[in-house]
Length: 250
Image (cartoon, rainbow, N blue to C red; front, top):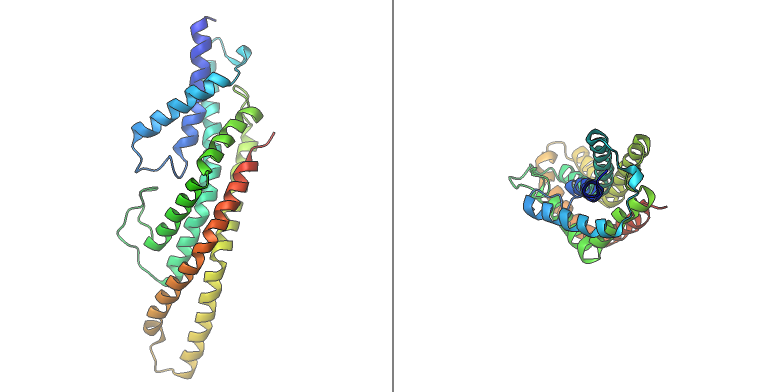
């Protein structure tokens, strides 16, 4: 095996995991971020990691097919790590969806720059607020530390098994639902009380069109509860940072 291969193959393996990791992240994988910026970021970080990470020569195959399979496994590892982070971030999206359903608002013609979908504006506002809080509190450094720890636990050429990656994704999905329900619990409780109140009014005044009269109440209550939810976003950001700091451990 020549010296050029010993230099190029480790760099490409690190680039595979790094690029797949940043591909699905909610911040760096946003569709609104130009592809050149994302590619440049992945190349810069790959150059930094390649300069400090040891690469055993015995993990590099003598054939290009073996190195290609190794690259595919590294990309799957990075994809699984990024997907776990994206799933936990999706908790705030689930909360916004619950708010949209409870308020009875129609879909707004606004494109979410993170996913390209047409979400409810209030939910998108909460998601943007969480992203800003996450970045200003050093969340980007936590993600870099997480990918660095992944090389300590799963060195180059020794990616995790498919069962380990699948279990990590499932655990992240469970955590997403837990965080989402915690954030949406006050909203759901408030609308449950409103539903009971409307049921009593409908029973007392059958001639009243409770459905039409309840729409302003639902919108007003939703906006009030969304404003009350804002202080909880900092606590969610802190919980997210704590999870990132211990997600990949030796």
